[in-house]
Image 1 (cartoon, rainbow, N blue to C red):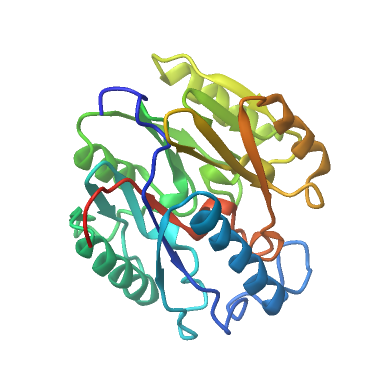
Image 2 (image 1 turned 90 degrees about the horizontal axis):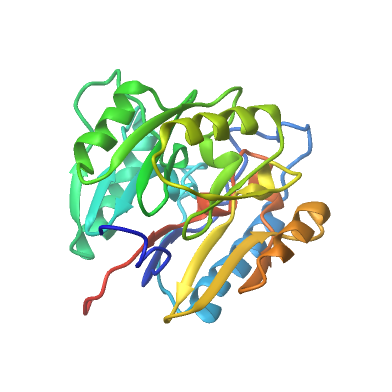
Length: 283
């Protein structure tokens, strides 16, 4: 893809259910709140319903696995652009099992599946990789290092790949995402501001910037249906009232407030729960 003309158009979504062991590896969130399994599963059902029913995506659901409490984070397992999927580094045995289930689905979709390098010192998480339609930004975080970013550059050679330092325990997409072609949505924290400044210094392209008060609310999902129907999934008004109001500036969009309060307690985001693919074929 030479530009952003096809950006946001998807045909399939790969998802994985919330297992009964949800939160087992981390009983409470970073703010000390206990996670609510039933509520998380209800929110997941609403999320997948929007993808299937409102946006018309073909949903491919990998069964929940109670032995893999973090497996609902399917975004972390692969980076997909065009017909190529890069499987991220399986840095522990659970991650290897998670990526294998995703790999099988991607192979069935006839994508060109590329493995991360054998170098165990390379680390890479999909939640640290932002594709703008023109280039890649890779966050250097607790989960992704320079060697991981090199895997992205080696796999997607048609696009520039730049690295962006991410502070604290966040991923790049914890406070930053694409809100449409050439529109970056970002949070208001100092870390988000520093990352955005680095991105602006590294890019040769111009992006519109929508800044929202809450970092977590900056993670949204843009999907284009047909030639000019723009949809944006974003955090609910109940969770982020001020940020939800900021999205009203996108007057040409159909806004779809979507709650992920339970997964967010464990560091998850809206985009954590799916891999979006543009693939026209008969399965």
